[in-house]
Image (cartoon, rainbow, N blue to C red; front, side, top):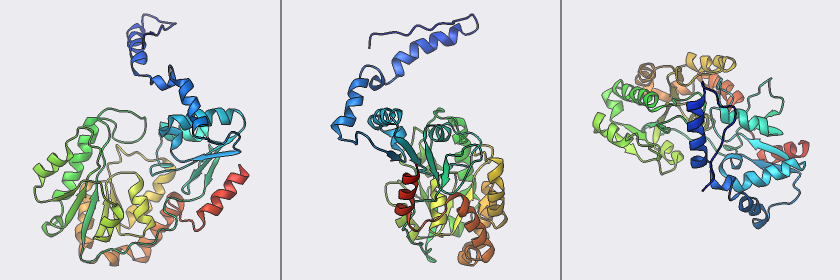
Length: 337
């Protein structure tokens, strides 16, 4: 790459930032978006994608596939409709999320897992089509507990309500240690901690081994459903997809996180308040561990209590709605688009 960037409107106040920007953009912008863009456009032809699609549907290629992006951009400019389906948790809950806002803005129709937003009339609340067809998973009364972990890059890469720096992730990790240390000894001995395969330099495995040498770690490569079948309780420690899926499987679940890092929209707080009232959702590690200690000997009595089930079902109707015929309902949405 031999070209450089010249910026106009440089003032005494922004000259230092402008110099950094002018230096970094040529270093960092992908060559596929500049020198190789014509080859990127050719991918649509080579892949024999439709020349005149009426509707284009994706759940993640809008972000993860550069060839798709170039093809879809051309087709939508020529009249094709773009439909994007929600592909994970956290959506519709956070007061700020750049990637969520971007999807809704570029889509003619955005399909949510049940939630709506009065500010965006193009959102269609279909349900969690990812879980469609899956049957409930029974807890193993002789099993242990499964605690699922998350990691994020050490430096902020998206503007949304999560721990956005190494320091904030370290605070998240300390909450995990506090949770485990607050468990009764008999429960801690039956705990499995599932790590995320992407470590991002946090050294999760070593940190866990130093803090709790006897706690069993899972490397995150296997099926989480297989782990649930060996467990009596699932514990989610962050706001993402997994607890929505365990709710959908009607599997006994505890959820906890620090609300200072996982901020919530005002309109969704009543749903979490309802989960909190029956002991599913907790705002501290200590509270979650206390609840787990209390219910451990008869988790089903707590989980299948009518009040607990009603709170879970009301929450799912909004954020993880079950659907029986996803293909038919998607087809109807495509026709309407």
